[in-house]
Image (cartoon, rainbow, N blue to C red; front, side, top):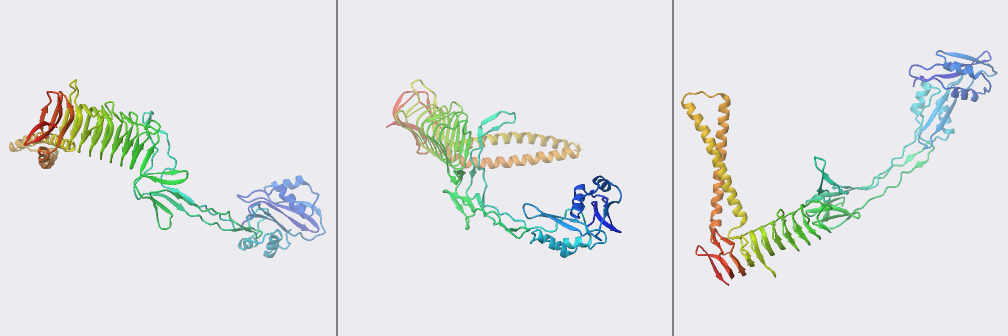
Length: 532
């Protein structure tokens, strides 16, 4: 310790008492008048010239003032300790003995602290440091209680957004996209959902007066879980057992592989993209999208919207695509009607009415029910097409194609298109290579940049040629299936009208007359029809 702050002390000389004031050292503070007055009062001096004391304290050099006669030869120092309300900290201030009087001893200090009620936490090293180098008129910390360490309540860490926002996404131009709302927490099987962090007990403290200070009681936590959730062995971590969406429902952790929308899909829900199945209790309004890894079931209608499912799509009322809507299912499509829409199914399609639509199925297309008609558009099936009526009395142009899976035909056309583009590109590249080859024959030297360019052209030519061969190989595998005479049929239970075109395995028939109750199929390599 080092005495930097200013202080004062008494000196007795020939029965005359003096107050000596010491100015602060560099970085220290002047002694405060109230401290000096307190010191004088405790030493028994009731009357003195306050103004002189003040001037003495404020002097830049050591000063002393006469306080009068005294019958004492010396004055003992004293100690004042203040315990803070928390009873953990205290401040001790030493007031010096007169010059030549006995200094403070370790026993003096500890005894004084004990008299002030301090029974715990005395720092004897600090006490000894003071003994070796006293510091007066300065707050010192000679004792410190043991601070209580509060524990922590148990808590649950969630690994998903527990408070999904219904605020719409903002576009770069500042407009609002009501189609995109953050309302789903999609999860995969095995994803961690939550972790319990166990409670941590606190540690008791001890006051300076020796009183135990207990920490606040901590609370454990628990989690309520629903189905489709598994945990680790000690039940502290919880994982999804299915692909679906996770949420907190009244504090309960729930994972569902079916997402239920109680009303319509509109501005209130935004677009839906979900790993599991989606059930819509209302309708899907125009301009909104639904993508589901499982099935999609719509109790109402689909109006000018796009639906895509990894499984089946079931629309209880029907689809009115309004010329822009599309429905694509990895499984089957079942609907009341399809109107002005594009519908594709990897499986079968079952519907009551198809009107002015593009409809494709790798399996059968069954148009049954009370009306059961197909009118307008293009119908393509890898299996059979069966309807009560096809076409209309007004001669609406309707194309029915069977005998090859639409996906296979689309791939066939895609391959042909890619081969055509690659061959045309290679004609250009070949011309470039030939031109420079002629230049070399004429003895024209090519610079480094041209040589690098020609190497790249040759590399592109080879890469294109490899892709042409690869695509041709795939085409050869597809062709037999495209040209095979299958056993698929177009079955018309009641009427088929002029204006209908029928394609079966590459063969075409235009319906020129009104026919009733007939079926169309390939027989001995020819497209035939017969009454049923």
